[in-house]
Image (tube, rainbow, N blue to C red; front, side):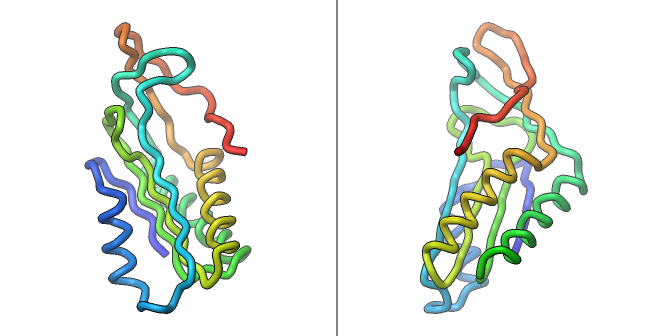
Length: 146
C-alpha cells in the first residue's frame, strides 16, 4: 500500500497503470476500484479560477497511511494507492487518486468509497480558492459524499 503527495501535476491513469504493473501480479486480483477527483471551476455559486491546497507535512501522510491500514483491516484488500496533489491547482487538474485492488468487487468498491470519504473528512488538507472576481476564500466544508 502506498501514499504519495505531489506538488506537480500527475496523470492518474498512468500512475494507476504503472503502480499496478509494478506491484500486482496478473491474475492476483479480480477487482480494481478507482476514484479520481479533479478541481472544479465552480464552488458555492462562484466561479473558481485556481486553488492552493495546503497540508501539514508528515501529519497528512501519517493520517492517509492510517486510513489505508484501517481499510485493510476492514476489507480483504490486496493493495491500495492514494495519490494527492498539494500546492497550486487549476480547474481540470487531478487532485486525488484512490485505487483499491481486491479479489472481489464488493470489497474494492466499499473500501475505495470509504477511503475517499474518510480522506475528505479527516485528512489535514486546507483549500484556498481564487475566485474569478479576484477574491480569495478558504473552503470551510466539503461536499457531502453520501
